[in-house]
Amino acid sequence: MSALRPLGLLLACQLGGELIARFLVLPLPGAVIGCALLFGVLLVRGRMPVGLKMIADGLLRYLPVMFVPAGVGVMTDVQRLRNEWGALLATLVLSATITLVVTAWNFGAVTRLASHLASQGRETGDDAG
Amino acid sequence: MTQAEAWNTLLASPLPWLTATVGAYLVGQELHQRSGCHPLTQPVALAASLLVVFLLATGYPVEAYTQGTASLRFLLGPATVALAIPLYERRHLIARTWLPLGASLLVGCVTAVLSVMCLARLFGLSDAMMLSMSPKSATMPVAMEVSTQIGGLSALTMVFVMATGIVGAALLDPLRRFLPRVDDRGLGFALGLAAHGIGVGRAFQMSPVAGVFAGLAMALNGIATALLTPTILALFH
Image (cartoon, rainbow over the protein chains, first blue to last red):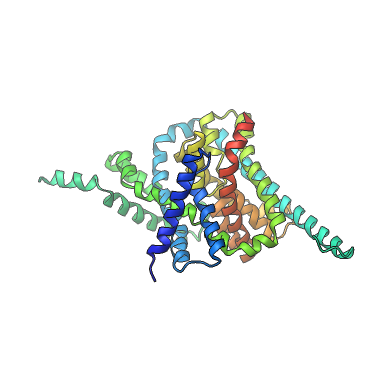
């Protein structure tokens, strides 16, 4: 089993994404387009290439290590954070709270709506839903 | 070659900085586990603090460290591409629950980004701070890319993303009491969407179902944030 092929696939998808982003001047990170490309490749192939999951799991599991340099880089911006820390904290905490409540509530409401529609569909003998 | 020269050529290579980074992370992980995996002791934050203390104590410039660890930053790209794999593995689940997933993804992503812009205006934050914080709910590699693209500072974004994860994970219990009718799928999805990887970890502590939906939400919101943030920003102005 070679780990080189799945690694090549990951890099090729990212490169494809970067090329698309640059030449079509899309306001999207190339890696995100690469993610869509890889998803498309997997759907077309219909199975997970050997070794790809292993590499991806490794990358995603040790993702936090890659953030350490950025965390150290904050050192140079500490003064700016200190100047606005109150407003920053308020914005962040409120925004996180609102996002959580709205998303969870919305998920519950749409789930109930979907099951309601489904049961209504069954009652009228309409299985389109 | 004098001893000082030998030392300097070594410091100009990535090796000592990468070793220090991995070492500091291992120490952070150990401390995190000893604290009973408390959300306030994220291994990344501990590792970064250790390295900052080290740099301050030794007087080595931050730039030397940043340059030495550029290769780690490169890996964020392939890691973003790899988000397609959990999505592919859950494609049947996505097909089954597409309606609540799609609706909550759209509503949640717009809320996450737009609420930052509105609150930032309300509290009088500078534009640089607002832009850096806008993608805070997305998974780190995406958030940092989006931030750079819209004119934010990715180093600041990283702090906001981390803080959002910690705050989001801490809010799970109050959220559960506040919305008793929402099941584990909805709570998990909200946690993964609003609080990315840290939220996913917290969701798995609650139940496997919550964890699966949180993981799905994290991957989907990474893509949605990248797609929607520039548009939301343009509309906001």
